[in-house]
Image (cartoon, rainbow, N blue to C red):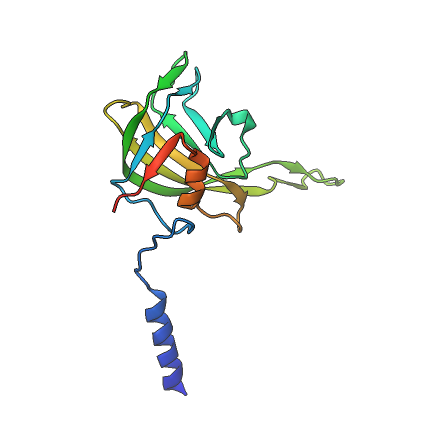
Amino acid sequence: MKYINLAILFLLTITSCSNEVIKDEDSYLYSVPPGSTLTLNQNITIRANLGRTFFQNGEVIVESSLNIYYPHCSLTVNTILDKDRVISPTTFSIHKVIDDEEYAQGYIQFASNDISVSSRGPLITGLVTYYFLSSSMEPDVRTLECIQWDSLYENRHLSIREIRRSLGDILTLKIAD
């Protein structure tokens, strides 16, 4: 019996460590490799005093209209200007990809006679992917950031298909071989 348990443990160990590369665009496990490209197909405007513009459901959208609980992306720049800036069509090289987490927590005061009864509120997370970009035509553009906020236990990184749906025809993502 001891050897059977060891054999089962051994089989579980070697089968759980797969290094298979996932290339399913619907899988949140599929990562965009460096060397991929992102092509801006039309002029976009980054408003004065802002460092980004947002995309959701294939449209440019202002942050106040953004539904953070659905997939969205933003194109960020290094320099914030006091006037509107137009980013012209170009192709960006994706030279680095980082998956990370962001957290937000609200403050809730519970009804109680004890003033110490409070909570920092519900925790929501955003599993964000940063695509670091470079282009000689638009050198101030820094990243494409894609995220969706959700509860701590139900969140995941966006799939390639969700990112493409967020970007629509405004930006085209081409995966390197």
